[in-house]
Length: 177
Image 1 (spheres, helix red, strand yellow):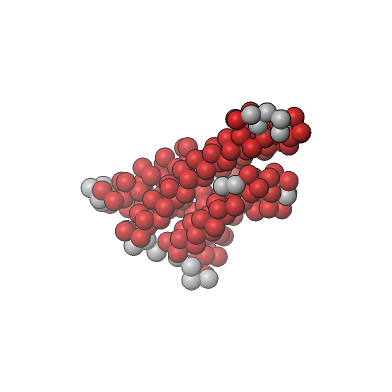
Image 2 (tube, helix red, strand yellow):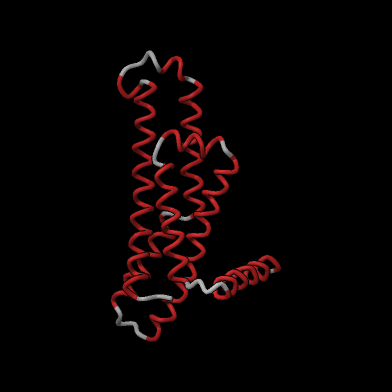
């Protein structure tokens, strides 16, 4: 119960801090989506994955960004649910709610961390066996294994980016401040 109260106070203080600084919810979502766009470029490569896996500060920064994205999406979701009670026939609000629900279900911070942890373990295995893999051919080779990981990364990161772009467009269409 105490954790719930502390969490509620923390979320309230973040909302007040954003309001005091003159930053609107719509602007904050746009800003963190832009940060994600920049961060996703690095995460799309094997080298970016290795940096994520081996650099604790960088890893925590990326995870914090994902948590921040989910925090503001939750704030947006709450606002849209309230607006939907008033005007349940607004299709744009309904689409935005469904988009956020899908994002929260499929790409939660927990699932994001689990996916990258799995890819870090795969990369670690590749690096441990790099000498042997260099003698292999095609997808069994060192370069082939890296290509497989990069394809998985690209697909996963692209899906997250697509969802965030859709949410950002809903925010713009609904003129959310």
